Image 1: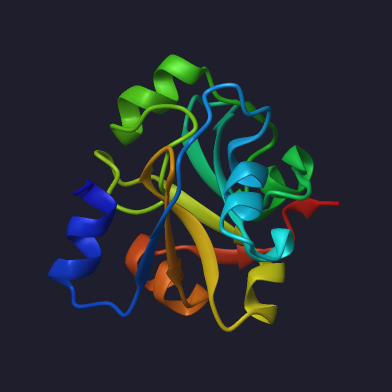
Image 2: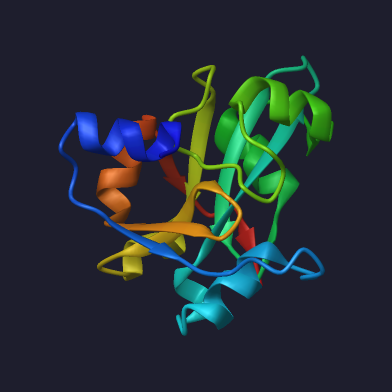
Length: 156
């Protein structure tokens, strides 16, 4: 179990867990998940952390097939500038290892933004808190349990 799955069970949120054999040599954890679970890559989302000019950590959930638009994230968060967070700071704040950071069940509550493209799907896949473990859930369920805002933050 991971904190993400513990949270979903505790609140009785509808979800499904999918696991696969993680290859440590995989170039992209998210694309590896899509490939090994035979999923549409646009439906698989990665969790990235950015830092504002004031040092506030922000969580961005974007499709694995694209990248995070840092200017769009800064605009959505109402800050002047955002840059990718220091990996060690991301791991400390979330309690998860890189490649297995889930937007759910993080150690600290961080403002979270989900790319608006997620709303096009009945369910999406995000990390369940460990490499090789994905959780499938409705975008609205993810937003509810992370207090997230939907915004155009992804770039294809």
